[in-house]
Image (cartoon, helix red, strand yellow):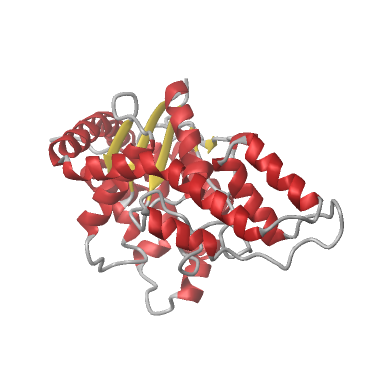
Length: 331
């Protein structure tokens, strides 16, 4: 059994891309490993230093991940800011992190390019905080996307550097948790690329969307003028629609529309109506659960308190040993 740590930024609602791209795998992963899932409220401040409703954002993410299937009875689910030991380890790692290597980080350079008015120290040292989040629990695995591979490598560098400087094998060197073929990439409704909340409005389908919104978004999805040859290859916008159909509709429905497409008899309006119906049916249980959990503050408080206690038990043990290794002693 591996120790696995994964962070969740409290920015925006969960969409289908999140669910099929990660959460379904998290649900399986938590049954096979010792998992820590944290809501990264400190991380969110690097790009949104003055959030309108930080607490509300954290609550929304907590509710939606619980509704999607994360289980606080078998995983540790906590809020980053509830574990002060993370901040202490972050500080200690920063003492051995170098300006040049932090400035060369691709994600840092990209954020500087996009937001030159908000180049803060937290943004620069994002990789060390990310490393502290993971190695505070002495984790061996961390699920990361393609855009986080460099941060994972820096995390490995900081763990190795600590071990080398203090002549110890204290921190395991974390590696990527590979979902393999289980990782499904969900396309957006704009006909290009993957579904994401940072894209233009209407590109993503959220688990909390109501029926009217889902139908409107699906019916506005990008299509073309239709196939002109039998069995011709589907262009990207149409391939994207069929991908969405495959994840929420029954195999016979997918086969039916594939056959119509291959025979040049497809009507995209009919396909979209079917996709909208199936999408509404798929999202309905999540929406119900989200609404139910949102009203149950006592349960949410219990989940957060239990998660903080479990996370701090692990983190305080690590930080106590780290202080001893470095040489902090009581008089």
